[in-house]
Each structure stands twice: as structure tokens, then as C-alpha cells.
Image (cartoon, rainbow over all chains, first blue to last red; front, top):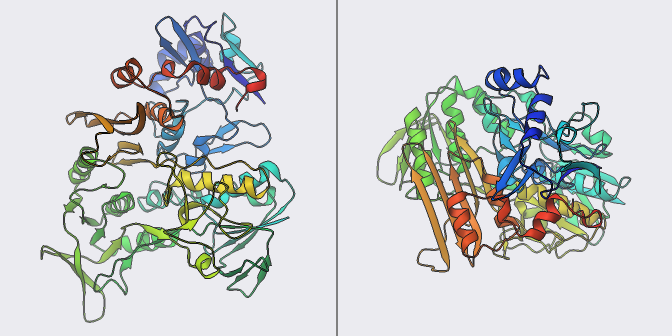
Length: 148
Length: 429
């Protein structure tokens, strides 16, 4: 399957990927509305996070592992592997907010939803024409989606 | 190829998914004593608390078993295994032939020999049936005593309390959560429970469960001679491996069913996984029974892969628990209570009682081997990485982890690249 791979040598730490992710997962699909209104109202959040260590930075999110620790730890069946697409999919309705996935994922790819007992995790923008918004928005091609 | 799985919990779901990674066509038969599709067992506390409805219990979708070509024999108990003839018999009188067998019968509640413990009004809290009975009862009863201040006991207490029943917890150890958590974390959780009105009694246990002439529960007499009046008693001390069928078949059982690195028992083509198995532990390298959810799935998965011929070893389990008490989240992973006086461990703990936050890091041999987080749990998984991948943390790196948190740039460069940006040939998935 095609995954998103971040290259720390190209990342300039601009956080544009985070904003693109936020916008793509907002209702309005408008950056300014998503940032100023929806973040507070419905807690829309980016599932991409820029990590910085000295001069180096990198934008990380769910790796959609073949054998994910989060699926093993999920007590509700909200996290499952989709055998067709290979994605690690999240069913918000089933999630009870027990944070087992957050504990088990060694890649720090799962965050608590800011307002609800739910999680925030990358869905690879599966329903977005043109693929992941973070990849499309990266100004220095530090994020690539490809088969490896 | 016919795979037969005894048990229908999360280890069995793991096994189905492990088998189907490698074998799309083999026949899978599940023999399950309970009469439902596999459900999220820990969810019964959410159900009892009224936080979710029964429609949210199933672990997988309606078409899951059909889609995976799984034949279900539910409400059916496996009664014996013949490892020479490779057959399993059931209480329905059937004999099922297997090529590969997985024993994933889970645990059964441990009930201590307290006088009066046998009879009506005593419940454990490990099955959906128990939860449903307690829901029905909750409108009719006023007081409950929960024996056991571990994870199951506390969650049972919380959810019964949420149904409007007064609850008292009785714990033999000097503190609650003595298993997976340390004293300070246990105290934060206990305070949260006391604040909402759940009574917590530590250092005592039930001496006798007293009954009326009609045999109904009247109350619990404690070892300090106090008497707690109640209508029901929930015994939640823990679970022990449900291994009798294996023992009877001559399969090697110590505390649990002994399994090798492929999750196979000493009987050929017979595997075991989950709460019934005594499998390898990653940190200690020893075989232990660690009845936790992620281990059950992972062992099921690994046994499934190996039954299907993939020859991939089980990498060992890591004790871990994530649980919230009235909105106070807690996470505990690995070795969190090193033996006292053992100088090979180094502990860094940070408590803020006002904010109800706590962080404890346990190091050994310049590696992180355990941690506890209370309140602020957001970096949980990133700490888990250092334990799981056994990353070296000498000098400055350790200081950075202690003072700055589990930053991804503390990872060894090679692991970082292989994980996040691998060469196509090295993509580890």
C-alpha cells in the first residue's frame, strides 16, 4: 500500500502540513474557519505533528502499520485493519475513549480528541480526491506518498 | 487445513486475523461457550455504567465471520481434546477434527474460600451475563461490597455506583491497584473514587459473608471485625487460567498452558494464547501469565500466523494497562514496582497532587523498562517505544528523556530511518 513517508532532511518545520490536515478534516474545508471557529467548537485537530529537535524537524503521523499495536490494544473494535486498502481504520462511533491505543502505539501517532472521549488519528485522507492533504501542501516535498 | 479455536474472545479474533494473513482458504471453526459474537470484554464496565448500549459491544462487524470464512459453534463448550486423534469433543456431543488447534479459553474468576461465598448474591465481573444481571439488579438493591481493589474491582465498583448503588471496596493490600501501579498512582485513583463517594478500605478483607435464614447475603464481616451491610458482593480478585481441558489432555500446564516462541504447546499442532497461556515476557524473558488485553490479541495473532505456517516468532508480551477513574486517566507499562533495595533500578518520579498528575520512569541498564502516567497521559505511546524497542539511553539521552520527555530524536538514527523513512527494500511495515 501507499504510505506517507516524511524526510527529515527536507522538512523545514513550517507546520503547513498540520494546517492542511486540520482544514481537510474540518466541516468548512476553509483554513481560517477551521482554525478560528471549528477548533474551539467541534475540536477539529490535525493528526500530523511536527517534531523539532534542535535544527532538525520532521512531520509524523500514523504509519498504518501492517501489524498495528493499536488494533491489538483496542478494547472496543474501533480500530481495525482494513484488509482491502491496508489502512488502519478508526470507527469513531465505536470508540469509548479508554486510551489503550495511545498507550500501545510506540509511534505516538494517536492523540486524545480535545473535546470528546475520542481519539484523533490519520485516515490517509481516504475520501479526499488527490490523496493526503499534508503531502499536497508540503512546500519542500518532505512528505511523499508512495509504495515501498 | 482445518483450524479449530476453543474460545471466542480477543485472542481468537487475533488468531483469525493472523491465520488469514497467510491462509485465505483454510477452514476455521470456533467453539465458544458464550452465546455471542466476540465482544470487548472490558466494555462490560461501560455497559454496566450505562455509558454504552449493547449494540456497541461486538468487536467486529456483522459480516466479519462470514467474510473470514469462520464457522461458529457458540453456546458450545469444548469438553475434551484428543491430541493423538486430533479431535475436540463438545458438550453437544460433536467431535470436531483439527489439523491445528488453538486453546484460547481465557481466565476464570478466582474466588477465595471465604465462608459464605458460595450461594446467591455473589457475582464476579468477567462476563456479559454478569453485567446484564447486575444491571437488572441495580434498581432493586441499595448496597454492594466489592472484594478486590485491582483494575476489575475498581471498574466494577465505579459502574455499579453509576447505577445508583452505594459501593464499598475492600482490598487486602495496603493500597488499591497494587499490581500494576505504584503507591502514589494508586492514591490519586483512590482519592478520585472517594471524592465521588465510593468507600475504599485497604488492609482488610472479608472474613465471612453472612447470610439470612433464607440464604440471601446480609453483609460482609471484615478481618478488623467491622460489618458491612450489603445486598450483593462482587468478587473481583483476579482471574486464573482456564486450563483444565488442556491439563486433562496431557498438555503441559504450569501456572498457565506453557507455550514456546511460536505459541505452540508441548503437544504437536496444539497452540495456546491469551489469559490461559504462560508465554514469554519481553522484559524479563521469563514465561508468565499476564492476563491483559493486548497480549491476548498479540498472542492470538502470532499463534494464527504460526499455525498457518509463517514461522514468525512471538516477540514477547509487555504488561500494560490504560484505565480511567471518573475522568482521571492512568497508564502503566512494564516494570513499575522494582524490588525494593535493588540498586540495578533507577526511578524518577514526579508528583503534583494539586493537578492530579504523576509520572514515574523506571530505568535499568541504561534503558527504560517501565513507566506510570496519571492525568497527563498524552505522551504514553512515545514512552512505550523506548521500552518496546529497548533503546539505549545513556547519559545525555536519559537526562533528555527525564527532563524533556520522550522525543523522537532520541531514537537511534538507524531505527528512526527504518521506521519513518525506510529505503524501499528495508520498509519494515
